[in-house]
Length: 507
Image (tube, rainbow, N blue to C red):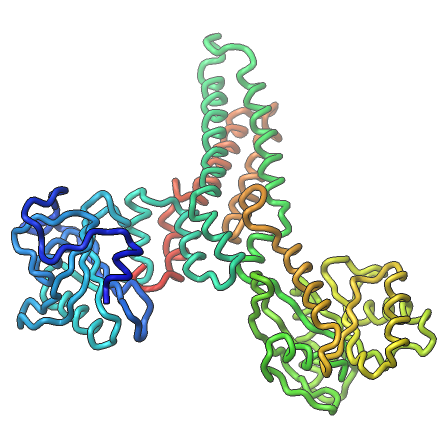
């Protein structure tokens, strides 16, 4: 059972513990330290082939001795040992699995840690967890994110890496995985840390000038170098902020809204995209009264697709509320799919472009030319048009100016859907960009808020530079504090609960 796992992990398995093993285990004391020890199921819940129970803290060595029967025996670190897992009080064998010992500081948390790799049946997991809580003094169940919080407090990870780990755990698409892995590698944290180092140097120069300039102990040009550094850094931060929220959009999902008049085929398009009857389709106008949402993976990019009520004037109070919600969702949309019934187009095709421009202004409440890349115009029910007429319409619209990309489809026959999906994927990709290209992206709203505060503080330095140098220096200090709040170097306690609350138990 365990052989394939051992091969993948490239570890040595020993039945029992070899007497001449190397890498002595310093963490098997007879008495426990005062710090609390924690344990949790670190793998997913539900039936599975292998489950991982992790413990961290000074009582981890006791857990290893009592459950794996390793009394007074040297334990090789980071090596898989095949052992019987027993209940210390009843001596009943609970399971047979692998145990791993990670002595401090070479562990995820920086503390002594142990992992029990057991069979993933609910009864086995419950028995092992019960044995830990009832037979190991100083051991308690972990809270959500507590293992990662200890890793942060031990200096194993910075705050941005912690957030990247959280995003990696929750990643549902390939692009989200890539972005989270890049942030977890520390690239974003290193960028902010380099800015902090430059600000510290600038602040030191300014304060030295304030303290010693009258004694002529400071060389000429110190303040000028500080001015140049602040100006360059402010430009870099502002450039970093002008990312059109690509990283945040990729992390939370692109908001794609289907909008249009009643009976245009909006719900049919939703059902076609998610390949299930998510919304009711009916020939009766005004069937959709509320926003119907469904998450999708479009070529590796996360999308939250919303079908909305048909936009029209109505005396029905419920439908009017649906239209109000549709308008509200349109204001929040990153990308809008405006669906139009081909039967509504003018019979004289050269007039189609003008009709569609007026229709877009009506639906989107926008200026004459909707922004390209944010709107896709979807002409539905093309199966009702003769083939030559469809071709002529496509040519006319391709030559028209001032229109967003146009897709001719039929939700009934599937005609044109491949081209539409390609256009949708291209639009979503442009909104998110490649997470591995260029500088690391902003992924958190709190990062953006602190960076905006940093820019405002640097502007304070520039405003007071020739008026009051002490107030100018305070601006640099505030900018440094704002950067420190992102990386966790200063003022971390007040934001730790916010960051760790979304972690799962056992991580």
